[in-house]
Length: 258
Image (cartoon, rainbow, N blue to C red):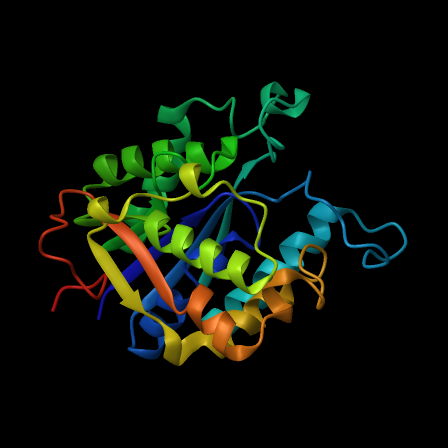
C-alpha cells in the first residue's frame, strides 16, 4: 500500500477535483493525506451559516475535517497561508497571502510532509490552476517544486477536460439548462494533454457528501448539489490529470502503479 498526498488551495477544493480518487485510494487500503494551503478566509459566505462570533476560517477548517473524514483522509494539514482572494484584488499581495509567498519556502513546507509520509503520489493543479485563481496557480507552482524537492515519484496535476466541458456546455445550451459561469476556452486543459482519466462513478455519493460538508460555501440549492444523479455523474464521474513526465498517447486509469 502507498501514500497519496492531495494538495489544494482552499477548503472544498479537495472534493470537487480529487474527491473520487481520494475515496477510491482509501477504500483500496492506501493512506490518504490532505494538505490545504489556506483556510479560505476570503470565500463568499452562505447566509446564516456562521454561528455568533465564529469566523469563516474557523468554520472552513471544521468543514475540511468533516469532508476529509468522508473522503477517507487519515491526516489533514494546513500550510498556514492566507487566502489570496480572486484575481486582481487587493488581497492578492497582502502579507501572508499564498499568492505572495516565496515558492521555494512554501514548497519546502509541503516537501517536509511528503518526506515524512514517504508519499508515492502527489496531486496538485495544472498550470492555470484549473481556471486562473491565483491560489490555484500557486498550488501548481508549489506542488511541482515540492515534488522535486521530496523526490516524489508520481506527481499528477488535477485538471478538467476542456474539450469535454465545451461539449457539455453546448449540450446544456441546446437543452436550455444552466451551466457554471466559466469560459470553456480558458478552463482546464486540452484533451490532447491529458495523461490520466479516472472513473470515479462508484464514489460519487462520497464526493457529493463531501461537498455537502462545506456548508459555508456550497448550499443545498447550489448548481453542484441540485444536479440530478445522471447529470452529477456526467459532470463529476471522471477526474482528469496530467502526470508529470507522462505520455498522453498512453493514457492511465489510476494514480497508483499497477
